Length: 479
Ligand SMILES: Cc1cc2nc3c(=O)[nH]c(=O)nc-3n(C[C@H](O)[C@H](O)[C@H](O)COP(=O)(O)OP(=O)(O)OC[C@H]3O[C@@H](n4cnc5c(N)ncnc54)[C@H](O)[C@@H]3O)c2cc1C
Image (cartoon, rainbow, N blue to C red; front, side, top):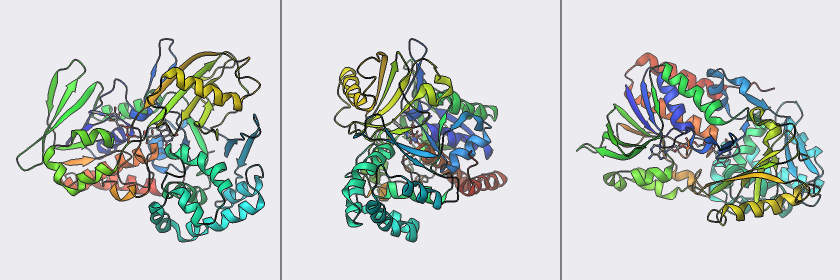
């Protein structure tokens, strides 16, 4: 079957990958000149990579790790020491480590919390543990039900002190979904914690060894094209044209030179962001409840800042939670990522979130504010003597869907009421929310739904289902 897919982010590409595995012929249309969407990156005038966002992988990403294994690119993940590392604003330059020992879950996480005395007192640890008990004992159902509360509301209900909110959960909320605890649904951090408590290496972090379009997206493209599929950049879905019965007749695609093309296929997939799809959805579909629920989902703004310095800063080979009100996580990519390695100069990549107030500010204002925050983290180097050689700011006004309470009910299934039309993307229903793992799993689930519905190739169907089941069971082999 020929399947037309709009959107060459991780969801669209993963969908294409699993469709060729099942014997179908996908053709992917990506609006941008590079693939990857929110993981896209491009080279600047000096040949340096500029990224849409700082990305890390977790051991608790079974579908992403399986995809990477299937593409035979496992050596491209650079696994770091098993720990979560926080800056301590009250002790500039001093880090707080939650080191996770190599013992079975959940004891590894429990020990890491018990051993950390920088951020939690013993009273707070006990209150934290008691507050978390229902999530541990009652599991996924409880975690799902907590979508009605913000994290802050949930912490108050559980009697967990505000110090924990400010010390740990602000950092975690901002890192996970680019918003603060008073906005984020409690389900999101609880779900992450649940995975970490269940999987020995779940909280272990890896960096890709280079820019995602080259090191992650291209192998998917090679895989898909070698199996007869096609991936085109600079081609934008402009219109979804319908037949009289309301199903899709064709995609109207616009090339970068302005010319239009009509694309017909057996099945059509939209793997653009939810914000883009809401604009593209044909009028008659907007009457349907399934499509109306999408009005409740909206992308959240976020900003990525990259700073090239004239010297090495005292950084570490890891992701850091800045615990700054302005910044979220950051890393010295000259240390953490092989392709960006530089023994003499640091390149910090930082995520600025929440970004609502900053998204319309100038790059200079954003860089200035970032430097003020960095002066607190590196008081001996910033503002003097370290000099910024170059700075790049990438603004994404609408990134992943904003994970506020109640959104779970509005996240659509990949299968739609339109027989020959499917959705994909990390905002669609899957348990990993707006993440790379969520995007890959959504792509896989879309391929599975197409296969199931059409069941044109019975053997392909069983192959695909098997591969999905295997991913759910996969224990990541990280070291
Ligand atoms: C700053 C930042 C940091 C992040 N950090 C992490 C992290 O550390 N770990 C993690 O797991 N996740 C992280 N994420 C989230 C992760 O990047 C996303 O969840 C994931 O990449 C989403 O993939 P997607 O395919 O669902 O959507 P997208 O990446 O949004 O893909 C949609 C694609 O559709 C294309 N498109 C749009 N309109 C059209 C059109 N009309 N026609 C054709 N194509 C179109 C877009 O160009 C895009 O390529 C981060 C995101 C950001 C922004």
